[in-house]
Amino acid sequence: MLVRDYANPSAKDSYFPESRAFDWYHGHSWATGLYASMDGKNQESSSEDVMSIYAVKMWGTVTGDSLMAARGNLQLAVLSRAVQHYYLMTSDNAVQPPEFINNKVAGILFENKADHTTFFGANLEYIQGIHMLPLLAASSLSRTREFVLEEWTTYFSDGRADQIGGDGRGSSSLTWYLAYAAAMGGA
Image (cartoon, rainbow, N blue to C red):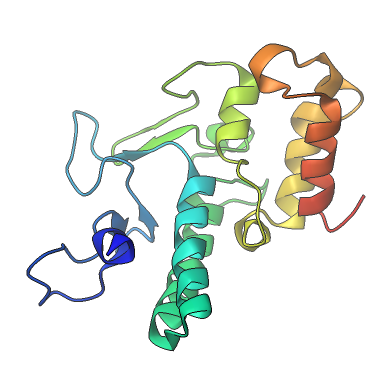
């Protein structure tokens, strides 16, 4: 029921909408669902989007529903491409405006604008972190090695991760290092 509520594949289901939040045209979900706000629909956390679709794939896998697992795989492929174009920007990104690419992440992506902030604060670690966490096996589909290295070099290398305090730092700078090391396949 939970998967049907979130990722229902059937337009004939009279109880749940088809693809409640996932927009097949844009290739990613909208946090506000498919209903627009003043600047259009928006999404703040591409990593949560990846996690939700990965959960659908894994639920299909563990329950033996091969069609659900296949839909999850298809959505992950579509989503990973969209995340790399719109949310996680390497220096060769040809989709977002050139002056925005050095931010490395979109922050909040609306239909009508991108805003390099979050709904809960403008600290750099919040903006980068909301697109990073949670890290899981599927993270490497959208957080490519090239992206991770560029983001690390731009914002966190040379001891800068150690200078992050409070909520953005977690238990220690080791948290940041381990997250990046995992995403890079070991460091």
